[in-house]
Image (cartoon, rainbow, N blue to C red; front, side):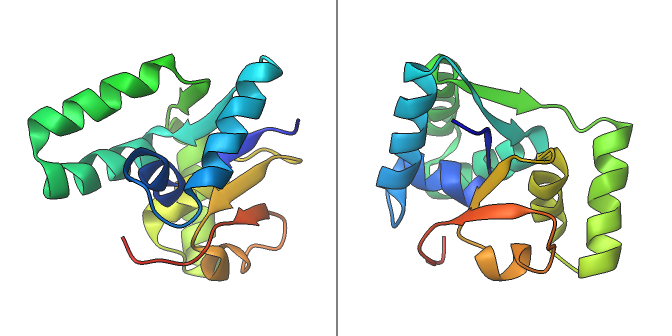
Length: 136
């Protein structure tokens, strides 16, 4: 299995349901079976946190985010190198800034899982696994 990098909307849908939930569940099952991990930028993790908090409130958000710790998911820090790469994507392609961190977290050969395929297709060197479009 190739490494998959989750955009915020991929994890959000996994946690709360919505179009593409089964795709993300399948990636987690496959990763666990193959003893691999999916990846996510800490910036996108924060985006999931605040999106759930607006809908469910902070106590329930804390429960959701604690449950993530049992999943085969690595939260990747936004160090200087990743942040510079994200900034280059923002300046060069005009993606929303948080999406740039998902793109910057993906290393060559890795696949970004997102419902924002239209935006990510602007960056030709990034391979994507599109989820069905749906507003969060």
